[in-house]
Image (cartoon, rainbow, N blue to C red; front, side, top):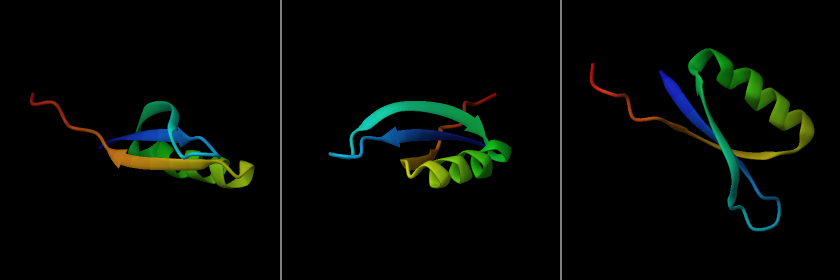
Length: 50
């Protein structure tokens, strides 16, 4: 499963940038964001039909 992770602006909460990662990378990114005090939004991406 893949997730889109968006980094949010500290002032107004708008998305500053985003990346799509696999499930194994989500925990590492969440830990990094927490250590740096960043606000992030995580949502599953739409899976393409094979």
